Length: 156
Image (cartoon, rainbow, N blue to C red; front, side, top):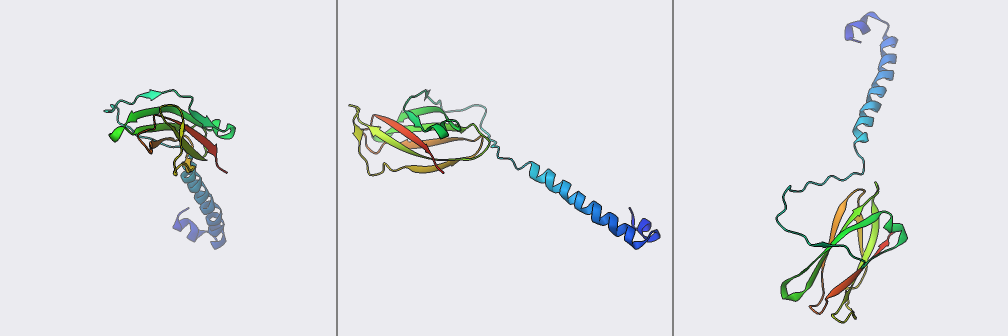
């Protein structure tokens, strides 16, 4: 309805149309804008990678039952860093559409399979968005560490 249409009609007719149409337009606009605000995660990576990862399937990952259905390990990459320190990288993927909070703790073992007690053996909190893939990296606290175990617990 144009301004000339409103001038030829009664003043009340135009205001009724404006009060009905304007809120409808605002509602549709908000619906379209907010409809794209899902909890999906987009990741961009180069087509060709330079570094070659050595991913291994592993049974050293311990997960509680609630978190196991949401966050899945993709693999573990291990390497020996400077000074002979063991370095690990665990890749995790959230298979659900909503964020998941969890804690993890890494236990390090020497060449005889004995646990190495360290002052930094506390649980570390993390969060992973729905559909997101993350990497957790760690370096052994001593060069005596030759193996590890990682425990994941769901956080409230």
